[in-house]
Image (tube, rainbow, N blue to C red; front, side, top):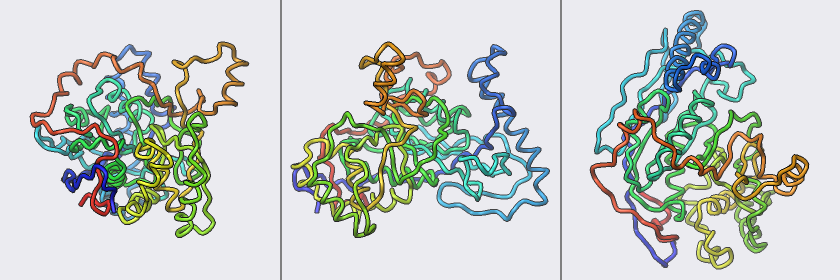
Length: 410
């Protein structure tokens, strides 16, 4: 049963009208030198447009060569459908309406990919292994920056953008080639501080992207490169030894629950750290965040022991994952920005600092807590497209106040 404190019987979630994800053919740096285009003096948008044309042209050539030996098409649901084609078409228009809650991305056939078997981009069936989930509010410049860098380093990856109670409509921007994302709007439930709502939306995101792993992003995440160290566990984020560890009683409780599914389970990381830049195995998401498992957690007892952080998304997710015996441990590609907190000046001191605080990792692909771009100017084209929704929805700011009956949003 959900906690009686602040009970809100909220059973309404936005109806997913449908989504299909743009699949791009991945590129080698030597074949598609996107970053080298800057030498021509073109704008970022021109560079990306040129890179897109280059990708399409190369895919058409490779598809023609491989057509005779192409395997039978594989139907993948619900994220997108793969169909046999002779060429990759130009981007199709996106279905969009000002008052709609969902932007339905165009469907793209998947051409034979030039990615080698050793790459971490696609699985054995040619399907992207990594997808992204970016919940947003009313911050615009940093959201655009995160989307553009995610698209640059992960051109094949589906990106699911969810407006969580804010007024800004990012739908038209998701139509642009340099962003290419699925956009949906949800009624505000302050889900980052309400576990039932958060889990429901994580399930929604995992279903929308349909990939092996889901990488969770936030507007303050900096993406510096494509990751090179693949996930080793079921979930992983920051090495946040600067955060308090969970109490031993909590660990014992979670291990007892977790061993029902995984008999040898032990808590592998006593902190939390599942902030922006964390990864999740989608199999673990569908299991641990399912209502029938979430409703078993003693949220009142946990909050008495762990305090207000119990209902924060970072901590609530690790509670749910551990309660089902899934392993969580920090990821080497996820880091924390320490520059504004004061870093040692010398290289030797920074090396020592990194040993003490491993979340400081300048080599990581994803770095959390970069808010220095929140006031950057918005490019003119995007500025013209981004408008508030005509219909305003109510929003919430409370912690631990949204609880679904039996943890089920339906």
